[in-house]
Length: 148
Image 1: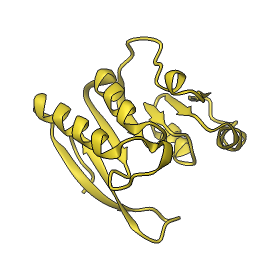
Image 2 (image 1 turned 120 degrees about the horizontal axis):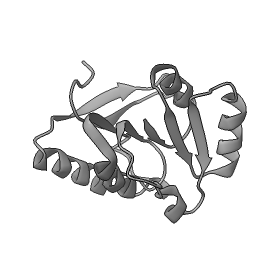
Image 3 (image 1 turned 30 degrees about the vertical axis):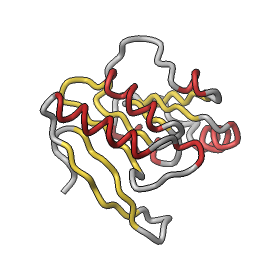
């Protein structure tokens, strides 16, 4: 799987995925997450501070799950459409928010829905509640078997 925006969910993904490639832009957060996840053998965490580096996927790899929960989400959405494996899922978190380096979430949502509709892929919007938050948030799920 490919994860834009490293964090505590990275360990959860690593426990369930064959391999996790996690990209982070913030050096301090990267150091914090890396120190907590040193025991993960199947997770590769990469610090990519610049926008160009953050969005650079070195090969034509395809991913079964692409999680967009970091910086420059509109650009990540475009990149995700190029690297999604057949039958895979793209999950774009916090599609109801706009802030700082998160990129244009409205554009990310538009790009992903257009991608899904062009390829006749199922998509749905999800309302979720994070245990560390006092409010619900929206996310976009592209692909089969959305959570019920």
